[in-house]
Image 1 (cartoon, rainbow, N blue to C red):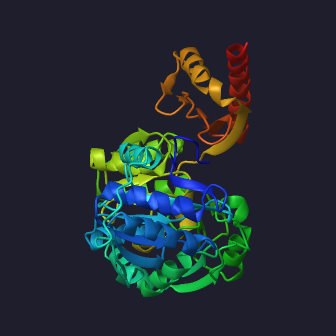
Image 2 (tube, rainbow, N blue to C red):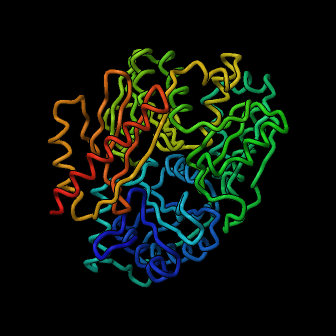
Length: 458
């Protein structure tokens, strides 16, 4: 939601189309971004939402009005547009997308000249320009121009292929089912896989910005059709994408859907075998599995707050080559330090080809954890004081307080309690070697949280 002094959330600007996100707003934020980039040259592209062409035209008008030249790349995956920024050596990009949000939403992402979304400090600069009416409009004869940028998807596909053993993958003739979420993954991923010698079956691959077949968030409960298709056609692997194709969730050859921690841990394992001693960047909400793999294969985990932009910027700061999130985001630095669903897919196939093992076998070799989740209502105004008390009451434990409170226990179980950035509640994520233990942790700490919230309220 857009508030009176805040535009940017966890991942760009988001809002309901023609309520918060009107063409007038899009043109003004375009001018604010253009003012920030000082007559720069920017790539602009968008996802498959019904509102994206309308809002993109308004953003471009705002950028041109502020004197910026635009290379318009059209409809493309977010990571393809981010790669184009570096490849074409421009000053940045503006991407009109709401990623995994429902179809009535849209959004604006702003990307810096390294292909990574701008920092929080840079977001604040744009917000100040917007709210304090510091927009700088160009003279009538210095208005920016717009020209078409052709071929960003082809360039992106070629770039991914350079980071894997394409010949080895091609020899395996893998059969891959792609669930493109009726969005931009359909423009790039089937092409990438066919060029890697795979047989491709697609579901939900027709472009339709209403997302008629499943929500654009690739959660396990939304992917039953994909899992059934993998089994029905006897495929080697299935992969589902979100609305802008920067996240990917995998289904193995047995038709089992795996949450992002597991496939990230698999990529991490084989990355560390090749690159011992490297840093691995991951949000504190990720599985202990990520730490287990780092410990076993001589890596070092750098925990961050939740948010893909934070992961990217931390990778840059600590010079890390790999990052990942539990929601299916994989950041492969040698390609680009941003979430990239296409790159993640190629890496998984590369590991399968290199080890000559099925995805189910590879994932079965990883340590096993059970996850339980919960939530406790907490008004926004109490969140900070509740967190202070929670930190105080868990001092004797092995904790991390980078984002909420995460506690690790001696039996490899853990629990994370963090205030939601979007709703008036605390979220709980527990993990343990048994389902019962994970659920017990959620119950126990939900009660503790409720007691703390009640004491803060009274």
